[in-house]
Image 1 (cartoon, rainbow, N blue to C red):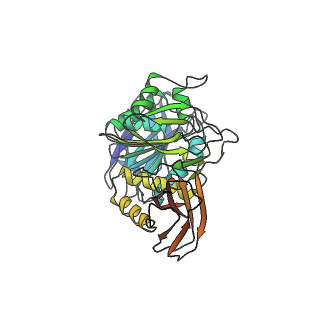
Image 2: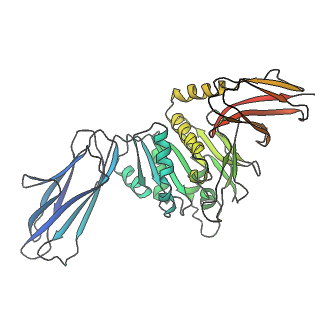
Image 3: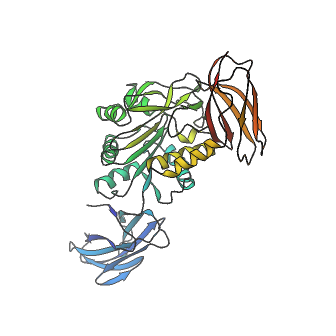
Length: 423
């Protein structure tokens, strides 16, 4: 039986239900149609004996005689995945248990936030993803469970979904085998994936007691996430710094991870396999915490910590914005990043032995200047006032080498240019 169907705006999506009574003789039943979070411009009704009902109907059924009820859903322009519930209640025997049937209609949705099914924590934090996508300008997203993802893939209802955001948080198992196979099927058909959560690598790859390793999990981790699990992380892995050479996220400022799981802080240490890039590193040990890859079929980015653990909302939103644009090949990402990059100029002279000057353009708010070394360690930081035109640096005490500098403006990393010190 098909449980999830793809709908289209202003077109009818039908579900036909054959009902019969097991009670002797003729019995009266109340049928109730209810919807969860149905958009105001969607319509739902059902038909019996050519009579239309919008919510409740009293229907007489004879014992073991099947009767057909036709449910019709007409989505509007508002994107959504709506759950409909049909309740069958015996009026003649109200003590008899009610019977329920659930079905779903998906319409005009392009991006899915998928909550892991291994615990309640993922559902606690799905707003991090939905708010981030809305901030990125995506208004065609919806949130579902991992179980519903499996059903929707099986029912071929998600053909218009372009991107998945797997919100694993800190739940076990990370994914069941059926869920793994569904995600792999989605990616094999050209869908992009962001997966986020601490202990994903530990659960799939460590072989520890109470973990959920399997051949399917190993294949997914190594051949789809293109990642290698090194070891379990700890509370020392609380600062992420970006790879300045990354082509998507290089302008993201240092992200601070917050211990939101009450002393359970396990951001995994990972590395990229061939064909993938290491995007963020932990300041404590220079091990990778984020890996991304682009294949001929899909794009994938794997956060070995939960996005919900990032303490600065602007940075989380920026990461999701950049991911969304990267997934969708948006030119606005390049234009946006170029504008930010040009707000702080290349220092002159460069290389520099003693002092150098950096020109600024259109600095409309106070910002923090940061100079970092190749490992992301902060060497120099100070505030720059709104409207400033230049920054003058005295580098006479700095060791020779390669450094990077940028402005941090409300959590937004602007610039990230290379500075070389020589003696």
